[in-house]
Amino acid sequence: MNLEKSKQIYEEGIKYIPGGVNSPVRAFKSVNSSPVFISKGYKSKIQDEDGNAYIDYIGSWGPAILGHSNEELMEGIEDIIRDGLSFGLPTKIEVDMAKLMVESYPAIDMVRMVNSGTEATMSAIRVARGYTNKNKIIKFEGCYHGHSDSLLVKSGSGTITYGVPTSLGVPEEIVRNTLVCRYNDLHDIKKTFEEHGSDIAAIIVEPVAGNMGLVAATPEFLKELREITKEYNSVLIFDEVITGFRIAYGGASEVYAIEPDMACFGKIIGGGFPVGAYGGKKEIMEMVSPLGGVYQAGTLSGNPLAMHIGYKNIKLLQRDKSIYDYMEKMAIKLEKGISENIEKLGINATIVRFKNMLTLFFGKGPFNNYDDVQKCDTELYAKYFREMLNRGIMLPPAQFECMFLSAEHTEEDLEYTIKSNYESLKAIK
Image 1 (cartoon, one colour):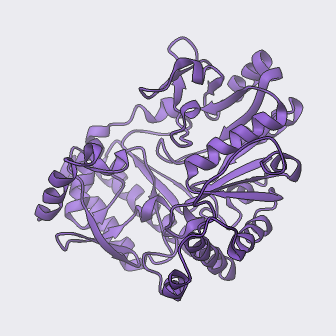
Image 2: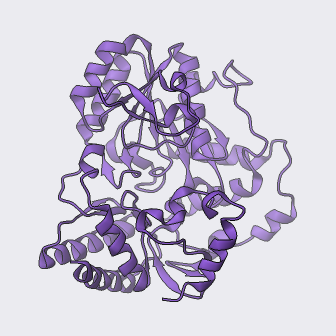
């Protein structure tokens, strides 16, 4: 496969952008490759700068649920642009969007728009601390909630609970109030609350983790989080930046039938534009300025263009919720085909699926937490990724990311993908 133009652009990019990319996973370092630069996309396909076409299973890491360049979604975008891009003043579409989100996600009564998932989680935690007048928060190892200082934390070597920074530039005193627990571990969460419960403001959790590969919470685990936060008067925050409007119209809250106190959103609510949001119960959200004493502001928050496209994206999903059934049907087909290939070839791998998201782990499951996924063979995944890329399949350029289905993936796409999966697994065996 010719990637000469991508290589040239990358060589130019590293002169001006750290690593030549604006987000680390795009560097393709985890798969021992240089980045593929994309020029355009349509439906289930994307095309790179060299003209190579790929069946796309990244989908902008989730937002492209209706496929790329959806004609109905894009219709009228020029009229919106002509009316103005940003005003720094309120617009009606912001209110329309907030109303739609509140109606679509029963757990929240009010919502505040921001510009990224990182902003959403950072702000939600600040609000939870302001509301409870407590300092500590709990996160889970392997869950990613953006790159704000207090969330760039992993467990220390001595115990799972006490966190240490995972990035340079994050002082230890910043993360001392972030407690790290093991995902899907009921004993660990109970023990942490017994020790620190009086000062735990919130738990933040990905109900379906998507950044250590696909690892879903057990219903029992989320139920315990709901019960223990109520017992200790802490705030339960669902990070639905990935799962919101993705695994179901009502997100993980609908799937698990659990209502958090607050929820964070992104990706799909912008239809591909930079966006984030956090929402919660009325009494919690009324802590946010200008009503309350928790400050948060943003010049581009509620940007009219992002709001118009995000609103239309959600309305299209609302109009035809059979999209979710279709995507899950396609995902089941992909899961079955890959699983059969693994068995035929005797490969040490496991395909994991939750609704319309999947991860092919190069290791034996089950995968319930960060420790489990760390046993996977990342070098073998890198070889597999390159084999699939050469066959025109764009997978996540890292073992610990998810594949996303869209409403535009076809039976033909999946049959070719399953065939390519067999050939690629055989080639690296």
